[in-house]
Length: 290
Ligand SMILES: [Zn+2]
Image (cartoon, rainbow, N blue to C red; front, side, top):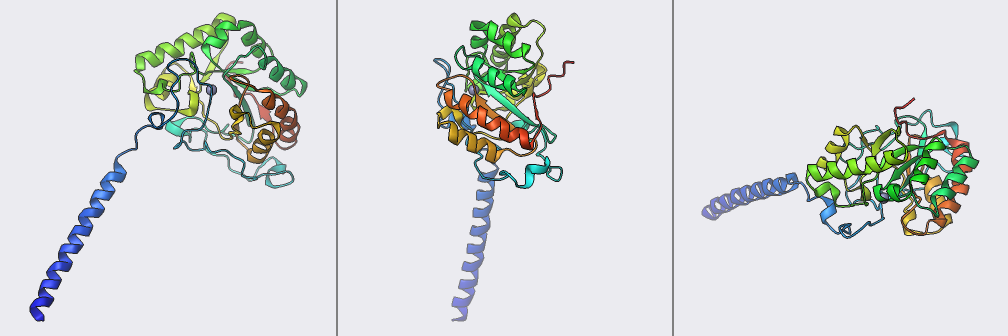
């Protein structure tokens, strides 16, 4: 049995070595980055716009935010002085994911749209709230009057690609650059002096190249904190609950003024604004212009 014991010892050593090798292999596997999420089922926008800023599966801060935190009368009622907002550039690929202060920013994507953008503008005007509009280039080209109206009301602008190309981040830097520049040109054709300080990638499908090109062109990559998934048209009540329940000091709220039936968003906005205004200061994200 002693021989057997020695054999067993050799066997144990072999097993331990095998386990170590297996661990090293597993570790190596975890060090290989996952393929970009835009290749894993996010619908393509190749044949036209695909208006859906659904969060990428791996995106930080991109989960629907109906967590119920900071409800009425809770921690955020004091303006959140004791709450530390997320670092501004803590989003996917270093994109901006909070305002960096206690202020809250509302953002409206995919427009301008002749039916819904004027309604959103009217509600914001009624409540004296300024926001940020992430406009799609071809929509800006088709509705320059609405781009003008957005700026005339004191809202700030964000580039949202030429035709809402969710796969843009996977294209060459030259193509990305051309898309973003074409979009800025369409915006500036409507408002020549407009400052376009932000770029938001459709679908939140950020990549290193798209972030790099946006920054090279002087635009901050802009993600979001609170996503009520209003593009799915869940109804005004659900949109309202998701935004009022999910918003904290520093939140950037994602909503849509185009890309489908947005009446729920418009109706929700009338309920959201009084709630948020009672708890936070709302701001248009600063464009850097005076
Ligand atoms: Zn969008």
